[in-house]
Image (cartoon, rainbow, N blue to C red; front, side):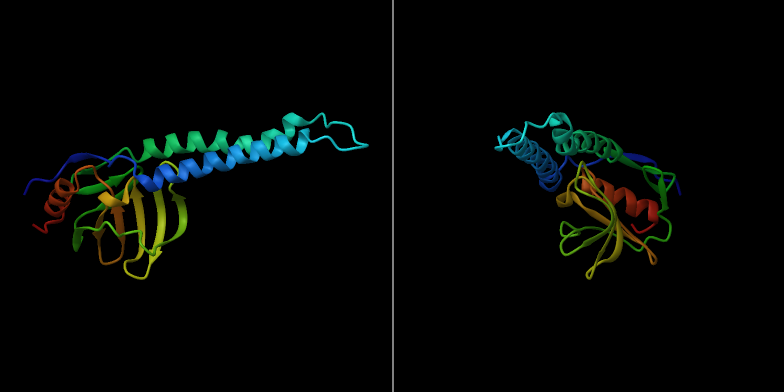
Length: 177
């Protein structure tokens, strides 16, 4: 039997990822505005602070960190592959032999709690836990395209641009079809 080797582009970033970016940018902008208002408000008997740059720097760092994080996380999850029957997600490798199920699950994050990782700034990546699925690792750009791969000892969620083709390829690599 020939092994499966295929590259899958991730789904376009979904609402949850863009919402996280907008909230981070909004928080940074609100911090800048509040800092400016507090710093520039004249107070009787006090001289104007000369540290306006320092006061503005803290909230501005939110923006300076959020944008590169959004771009880097997006690049890390832009594509993934099945290489010789092994699911490759960035530096992690998951042999598909022994996988028991490969299914579409748009509700994968419903009720899930993030244990560790990025909850949406550029991508949804990390370790999660939910009552319905248990512990799982997420490598998502859009939960609406989520596919769950289950082994006896682990669960991984990915979001390929073409979920049906990924399911077909993963099942073939796992010997499930």
